[in-house]
Amino acid sequence: GTLDDSQGEAYDKSARMLGLDLDNAGGGGGPALEALAREGNPKAVNFGVPMRGRRNCHFSFAGLKTAVRMAVLKAGGDLTNPLPDPKAAADIAASFQHAAVRHLEDRLTRAVGL
Image (cartoon, helix red, strand yellow):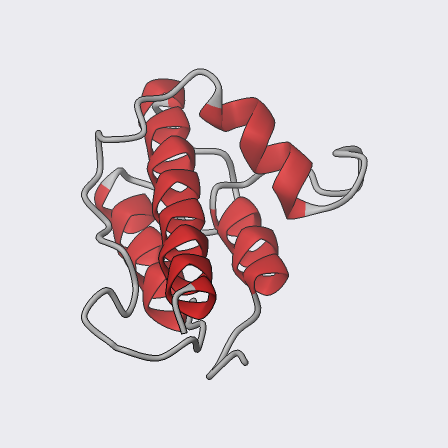
């Protein structure tokens, strides 16, 4: 189960913090972040993979959302409008997506191994 925020909520809120338009994204934060992430480097921002050391099957995305928030602020964002540097925004989106998917992979690999 999810300990705090769901994956969809993390995608939606991260997209909003990057100033992306979710209304025209065709499905919320996921498609909006994916489109931006294609232009970015998934290893540019080291968000880390949530709960990597935990030996359970729970999900947690709150810490990853906080890391995105801090990265957006560091890049000069105001958490509602697009970042002044489009490359920084793309790197944050790609790095978020990389960490979120790795988290899913870790948890699912753990579940299959039980």
